[in-house]
Length: 173
Image (cartoon, rainbow, N blue to C red; front, side, top):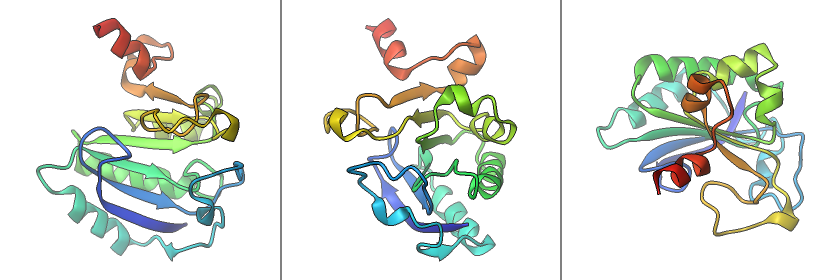
């Protein structure tokens, strides 16, 4: 698997302060995508054990709240095995860290696939759905278009039903 970049000080792709990995490769090619350079599966650098060690060093800071995996698309078939390994290892080393993942794949399809379900079962937040230029809204947190959902994976696992972060925020107010 290749990656196009690592954002070492990220406040845009999660809640708080974190580190984000941008994997390479996406078949969706959304019109108006903010990151089209990541569509090529061979863009950037090859992900190695040294890359993972570097990510560990970034995450091992007391003020880091999250680790996010974006792209491209981390859930594309070409990326799944490596992304599962990364998420598993990060979760094992940093049990309390929030892990977030973005994909054009929809939650309802992801939970039907064994490896994809295994990936998101290790994550805390999932932003699903392809970016739709006609539904673009720059005021939305953590997503680019209004069709995309921010899914609270822990609450969804606990209730057995899809729980959106918006639903949780409305119940608090």
